[in-house]
Image (cartoon, rainbow over all chains, first blue to last red; front, side, top):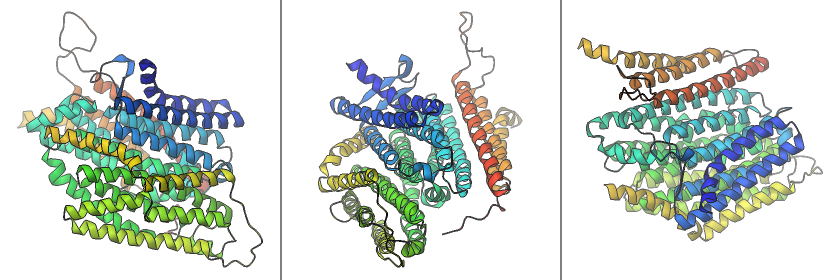
Length: 498
Length: 118
């Protein structure tokens, strides 16, 4: 039994990878579609099984080809990994299913097989990035997921999608190459690529500390691009704009989160407290960056009028909250950061799905066009309304819990500028979300006979996402019990070493 | 002084090539040349890995009881992977360029209709 369970770990990554190829080769629409759904379902179920196993052992290891850890590639699951695996699986399944009604109409002709294939490959790349405990293996999965997501974005019907995809490719490849360079320097100094091993060796480098900082800076610089920290994110706002509904929802929910996971892994578990670098330098820089992200991304979101771009800028602002709560570098605030991640993934995916349907049915891409567009049914309005409230963070949603806890943390640490930035960001958040809600409510069109019906599948999914959001908001202990273990694992470890 | 420079010259070369590639991929207007810049940039990294994994008088990593000083094969293996990744990226970028050429009839970045800002 133990043996079987350990084998789930590599299967989690390799199953969607294999199926991704198979789906492309089959050339039978129904079969290909069925296999895609089946793969996503099975992978999600496997992640749930993994969760139950995790609850028993609290950490699961798998050595590829039975090479022991520092020599071979190691797959590893602990609390933080578990949260991100569950999140990625749920977002991937939900986004795929919710887009099926309009996916073929929104994408290019004859792109069905490539869409299914690229979707599964991206998915497996994301899971690989999360599960692996080897920094170079992480790069390989980063590239698998990035290459597949360039294809996903290029499949959007708008011809600007090609340009968006190309720009993403250039920036993505540059950032990944910086990451490899950083790894090269670190490997040169330590002679190991295993994360657990690096964690032991790096603090004892002494005279090579400066070179190690250089390597780590390069790695962080590379990952910052992928996370989507505010100033370097034109590619992100572009792909939000041109990607088809399910692609948009999937990438919005998962891609920056997975990069963020890699970022957290490398900054917080490899680089330790006794390295001055992270405390005196990196945390402060990131704090300033995240304040800028919160304020300016929210301002941009207020001024933009493209529906999807508003969501993109709001994502950037949310990334700012997440980074801010991580860079305070305390156990409680890190816990808050994880709650933010879950909140953002759930709300942003549901908002992207609804916006996708609104754009598809009304043909209105901007707020002013939306005001003039035909009647929309009330269901869409209410689902958007509730998801927007979740994003703003009214009491009873996860975002509210996270924000309150973040504000408390900031007050305790006497960080007043950050406090003001969070408050300002929340107010701007209310403004930009209500601009869209207003446009959805107002109906200035002449003829209101034509009504369209929201298909059942996405409706059910959006309701499920909102219910999940509210449930986790009303009963924070559900999430807290795993996120607190994760933050304890990471920070307890740092304190023990320090 | 001179000996020191001789020791580190591969690193200097790889850094220079890296910067050339980076500059080219960011600043050039022609999409194809951007991709070339990217290739140069990636190859500079490969050169960097090879530089630090070279050992003088070391044997190839094939076991032979007569010798006990081998080159570490891992960086070379890593670079094989990186080369494959670079190949895939280049291929995809070229495919996208073909599509951009078909749709916009140009591959100069400035001539592609500017992305309307809302």
